[in-house]
Image 1 (cartoon, rainbow, N blue to C red):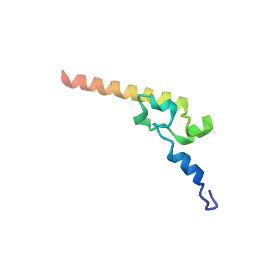
Image 2: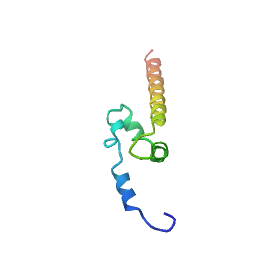
Image 3: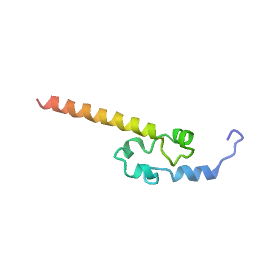
Image 4: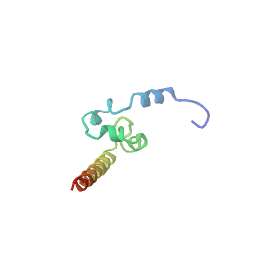
Length: 80
């Protein structure tokens, strides 16, 4: 990439990599919050940007669970 060339095959891979094409993402409740995770992490840990990084997925879901719980508690406090 530093020589000014452009890898069109890699562009195609990125173009088709999303939460609707990643098998593990299609049934995940958090898919629209993380958008399928970080492609660099996926490539590094699984060897493919189409295979989500599992630890990253679990951490993101836990963050979302905590954020939703805090927001629900905040809402309940406002109601009282």
